[in-house]
Every structure is written in structure tokens, then in C-alpha cells.
Image 1 (cartoon, helix red, strand yellow):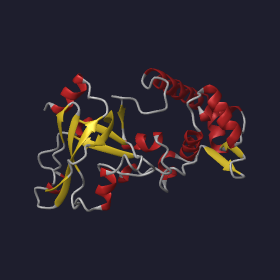
Image 2 (tube, one colour; image 1 turned 90 degrees about the horizontal axis):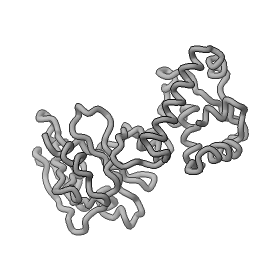
Image 3 (cartoon, one colour; image 1 turned 30 degrees about the horizontal axis):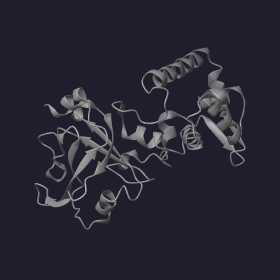
Image 4 (cartoon, one colour; image 1 turned 135 degrees about the vertical axis):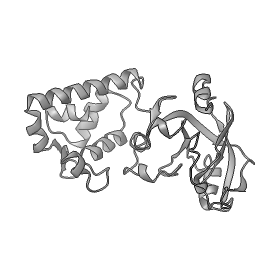
Amino acid sequence: MTIEVLAEQDESFESLVTKLQARDSEISEADVQTSLRILDQSFFKKGTDKHYGPPIINIKHQGKQIQLSEHFKKNMQNKAFRAHLDDLMQLAHYKHINHYHNSNSLQLYQKYSRKDFVRIMNWQNDESATVYGYKQKYQTLPVFITYHKKEDISETTAYEDEFLNQDELKWFTRSNRSLKSPEVQNVIHHQELETPMYMFVKKEDADGKNFYYLGTACYMEGTAEDAQMPDGKNVVTMHLAMDTPVRDDVYRYLVEK
């Protein structure tokens, strides 16, 4: 949508926000800032242009002038390129309406990758590669679980996360952690810290990079315990209460081998 607006004329940040919100009232300034960081590639690590080409937009005068790059404008003059671009934008609109219910927030039981999460939640940069199981940052706490681990998985990562029922999950922190670890204390007190816990689960590695979003969860007071991994390293286990019970068909798919 940002590209569509900028294809008509250059904009300031304020005017761009106004025009985008006129098309979709759910769009926030943070959403627009994230889209601009993606299009000028500042959201990603250095070297992204080697894979995807130069940035699509240029931002000048501290956001007072935002324009499509000359390279991108030139490509848009190519009929085949423009046809492919129009197809992509139409597909994006279709998915937004039909798969994500015309909403910019996470949708229950839709599939997302770590990269999707940090983008949707407007993290400053793409830190998806550092979300090893979970990461507490920017007032968010995403948790990513592969339910059925490979048999030859390393003992240091053989976490036995397990649904006790559709409302409750037994969850393991990273290894080399104890109840005294600041990281663990932050998880235990995530509600007091006003940091929602977002739960993502996939059945197995064969499912690829995408995880089912199962909604938010909360730490169940008094359930955190020090434990040990198969290799003897310390770990903490705790029970999490799902704010929304996992839907029957999704639950059965995830837990059954």
C-alpha cells in the first residue's frame, strides 16, 4: 500500500500516514515507520541489497520527502515488471482481506514466521534470527515451539515442551538458566512488566519456518521449578495458561505424532 501511494507522488511522513490511514484506519504511525524501514532496507542487516537489489525508496530531509528510488521508477516503466508488481499488490490485498480479516494484528491459528512477528510488532530491526525459542523485547515476549523434536536433536536443546491439555502448556526455558536468572525472572513477571506472551507452535521441523499462532498465554504462579536437561545442564520449567483454549483440530494436529 505504501508503494501504491508513493507511485502517485512524493510524500512527507505526515502526509503518507494520513493517506494510508484513509485507506485503512487500523494503520498506525509505527506500522508506516516499519514499512519504510523495510523499503529502504534499514530494517535488515547490512548486505541485504546483494540479495534483493537496491532500496525501493529514498528518505530525505528527515522524513520531509519520501520518494520511490530512481532505480525502482525506471523498472516500473517496464511493462512486464509493472504487471508482476500489480499482481503482487493484488495478492497482498487479497491475503490481507481473506486470510487476515483485513486486520494488521496477529490472527489466531494463522501461520507466521519469526520474521513475520518482528515485522508485525514493529521491532526496530529484523532480529528474527536471534529469537532462539523466545525473546523479551519491545514490550513483547514471543515464544516459538517445535512440538515434536527430531530424535537426533542435541541434548542441550531437547526441551520437552508439552501441552497438558488445551488450556495449559508445560514449557522449558533455555538451558543454563535457573530461577535466579534475570531472564527467567522477567518471564515469570511478564504480566507485571506489561509484556504479553505470544505463543507460536509448529508440529515438527518438516513444517518449515511457519508456526501456528495460538494466542497469548500467562505464567501460572508457583509453577516455575529448577530442573535439568538430559546433558545435566540447568533449565527452568513452568506452566503457561493459554488465554484462549487451543481449537480442537489444531490441538490434535500438533500433539499427535
